[in-house]
Image (cartoon, rainbow, N blue to C red; front, side, top):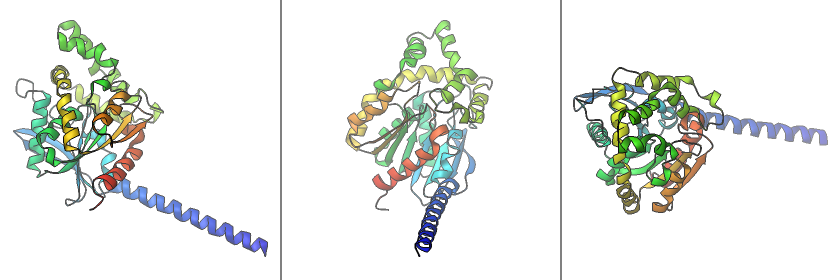
Length: 324
């Protein structure tokens, strides 16, 4: 009798474990499959803008704003993990990814102008209320959009998207500060090192737990875009214009304090470019912000994409769309 009872109990436990495992697999499958991703282009102020789009048209919107030297390509795995429940758009800025890259003589490569272009892109797509995911260059572009249209931002999801002096690591003093002070040939030569394959690989691999798990497709695609004839001038113009972002930090902090958007901070704490102190600084202006440090680097999606997707889904469900 005892043997039969033990066999029955073992069978029930096995069935329960199997059911739980199957449920977890189904949940992950739903997150990773989502709605099919489409790859589109549109004309914005005479410039071809490429973007990735997925998810139900009537679902809450998430706009993904990429960093340097990447493009919407950095979101290739995140988009399907969100698009079962959200309408997701990820544009490439002019000069990046598959968007047009007119020379600086034809398009002013400043963060104000990039924000103008993305602002007009969203307007053309009828996007007036959304959550934004900002990383690296996506932060100064995203905060410009937020301060222009504060009523339209439902949440700020910052993944190593800096908005504080505390977040500027020693990297900036080594490479950018001298260039901002005097863009002479010597300082330009130093900055040009950031356009090399070695520097691009470093952004993807430094600080990662398992660098061998990062697909070379990521940094080689970015490098292929950087290596286009004339793209160096585009990137140098943006490096120089970045000096105009830190003076805007107080305005961005005021926006956070006064408009009180929901804020999720997900930070690769081993990022050589934006220090962890930049993540913690958000709590000064948004004390109830949700903060998560991940043991990875600058492009955290490459190593912790599944975890970041789960954090985003939980955060939006609990803090933004709980009554939907």
